[in-house]
Each structure stands twice: as structure tokens, then as C-alpha cells.
Image (cartoon, rainbow, N blue to C red; front, side, top):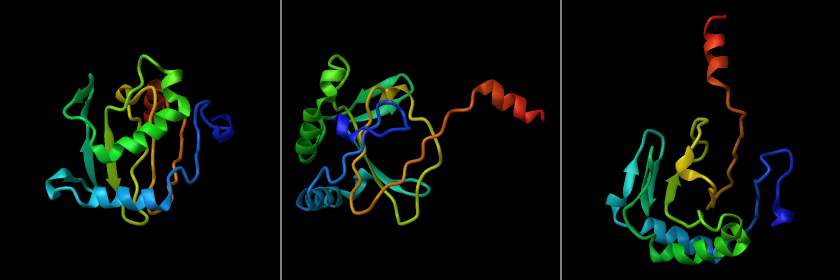
Length: 147
């Protein structure tokens, strides 16, 4: 994993190009597209599918097992060694499938403790740009409001 570690970013950020093959990508896309329409939730600028659990402020509420079509992908991610870094905490309990149109994205945000210690992102059919920001402390925000 060390060869995939990114520099000048958070100490535990890794980028694995071409982690999945074209055939695996096509299979995942087929699975995502062949679920009942009721699995999709329409948001303002995107739609999504939620698998496994519902994130809440007090933790993840497990609602179902992850679907079989995610098993190969999750197993390969586990083989990278994340579960050896966090053996007591790490297991796949949730998967969000976000669908964005070209040029769409989401505003800067913090996912919160329910996604700690590990988040994995797999991008299909396109590339992804992720910008990381240093959070502004609450007292800095209050001071700026009075300037």
C-alpha cells in the first residue's frame, strides 16, 4: 500500500488507479442500473442508492447485509490490509452509490464520525476530483462574522 500513498495530503490517503478492470466496472454498472427504481433516492443535484445501513448522528443503523454483487469488491479492498490497521473497527457496513451528471458534485462537507476510521471511494465511468480543506474552527467563523 505504501506505493499508493499520496504525499502532501492527510497521512492516510491512498490512490489506487485501475483498481477494477473494465469487465468488473461493467458488471458493477449493470448491477447498479438493474435494481428496482425504488432503491434510488432523488436529491437536489444527484440521485443515490443506500446499501447496508442508514448513517445517523449516533452511528450506523444496520438495515440489511450488503448485496452479493458488492462482495468481490469489498473482499478485494479488505485484502489491501485495512482490516489489519483497524482490526476491531473495520468492516463494511454501508455503501452509497452516488450518480452524478458531468460537471456535478457536492459542496465541501465533513462526513462525520460514523464514517471513521476508513472511507473507500470507487469511481465508475469517469474520473473524480476531490478537494481537501482544512476545517475552519468555530471561533474563527464567529470572529469573521464581526469583521
